Image (tube, rainbow, N blue to C red; front, side, top):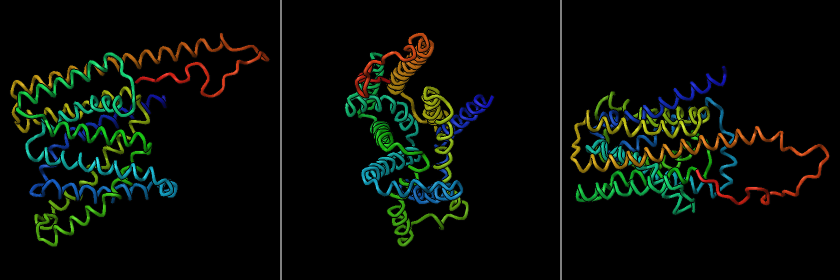
Length: 334
């Protein structure tokens, strides 16, 4: 019963996290007349305040000392902070400039870009279905570029920046709250300096647009931290395959908002490009679910066969040293 409750809590947390990310295009326009860079700076500053309070409440400070003695990890977190800055800033600008649909495309193609980066940068090998999905995604970008007269730069920049961010985070291997704390700490002083500069010039909207606007700018920290915390709660309670399916909630919601609420244009070539991307994601999801099911079946078969193949007590054991056992050196393709 406890396991069922844990999974239910994880599923609800996942729905909440991706749901918030999906409807966030409704939030950024509320912060006008603040520009994208000013909103981004506030997001950095207030996010650090929120995560600092959370760390204080949870008393999760013990990781800071060891981290400060790992310059390589600090450097990687600095790169992560830079890439997420690009992603956040471009996304805010895209939403407030009427490019919600193109922004949603960026997060649709992000899994395909992540797979391609795994091949090019990490030497990973793909299954045929994954190759087909990546090729179809590339064809979609080509169709969109020809139809629109130029590549979908916003979508590509969002996809590549977030894929790079994910790659760096994979190498850092830190919890979401801790990682966000370091990333916002790296960005805090430049962001605060920019806000002070705006205030000195008299162009800051923090105090000139009323208390409601000030409260909305301050809430950027909550909007940033809450879904990340919910995502962290989901990630430790439900299977990765479920997380992979839930992640499509966000671009689907953003796409629907762009078309139905913001009334952005969807000419035939854009529908064709999106159709190809969706086909690629269907293939990718089907392949991931099939592979996960096959791996579970193999693991279960191995557990059932273990007692029958166990060596008798006192029998000589084969010399299987680390790195020389069965399966050593084989590539785990996922």
